Length: 94
Length: 423
Image 1 (cartoon, rainbow over the protein chains, first blue to last red):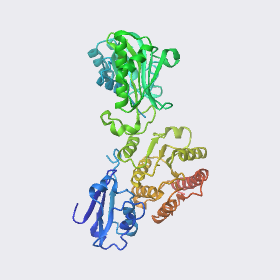
Image 2: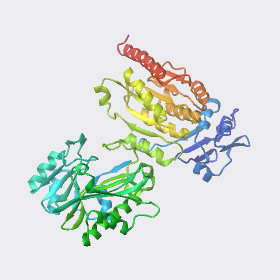
Image 3: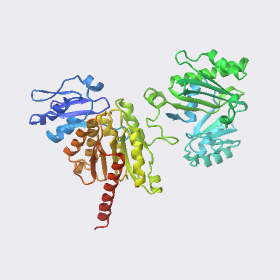
């Protein structure tokens, strides 16, 4: 995990990368909002004005992240386009 | 249900101590000749395809000489047996058969128990042999299948002495394979009495596809059961999605992988995804009379994650040549906002230049839990605004959705044709 990148792996295989250097200037913090909506994974929280994890990396990889993709899509629309979710598809991406 | 090839089944038999004739796979006539010499003539050349009735269809040929092996293998390889391409043959030592039997262990849906079947009328057309030649024995899965159970069954067909012990041992080993490999069916026809004792001259093994994840040593392709052909690359890719994530399901099968059939019946090939098999079938039935042919079947139900929808949508759009896409949900408790997120992320990656706006006609019908949120998301991401996209809700029936898609397609087609003609 780089100093300015928050990165975690998800259960189905793949990873979420958040470029925290962009998050400081983000006014909406839309990723944290959507992640803490009803029925969502509640993986992200706001700490010192930027997204942080409220679960351990192990718990997230075990299914703690519900892989709703809301953080990436809402960051894309209302935030600073700081989130990239990579979900490899075996055989298709090879 | 996943079928194993005869040679794969026989490898398992061998591991469990069931006798099989000496044999090897061959992919060319020259290789077949070489292997036949190694094994010793005469041999039997067997087309390796997922199909029964091979003997009657010319897929099993005996060869006495090296030249005959080359000649017959050349005829078989590349030919079609029961409509399936033959790409490999099994070269086996011809067995001297004293008598043929039939043995099977299968899951009986009526009793919800395994049933062991033994018949003294094995070989071709065992189904027509009559019930007096067939003995059945249900198995209590908690008690298991013991050697005395197998002996009791074998005695009913008149076995005694060494033969009774030998055939009972085969039945016990078959049951062990059935249990350890999560089979739905394991069948040996014929189970032949030869100079080596009881020998499995054929094998048919069907594995429960829900158990593939724990049958790793069998190296099974993860794709859905697609009948008599091998799963395609896209079907295997889709199979991996479910194997890696149990949350909800994504069943994807290519009905017309080459688009040849839709062309033959003069229908427009389209991609398809439905939430629920019932609604999928109804929707497909509505689309076909209007001139469309879904080249794939897909069911993403059981409340799958958005990431599952993302992956399966990318796979559907990977079918190059589709001239449209239809998504429809049944009214269910599935979180359709997650479904929508998965589709939107996929569209954004497939069509990056337009921000996810597709260049083929698409209809998305969200009906059920969080359907309004799903519809709103398509709007927020600017995908609903496109002239080739229709997003609908629970007030639309399958028939109406099919008509909406048809109208959309014809407008798109007219526009595309005009552009091509430079109008």
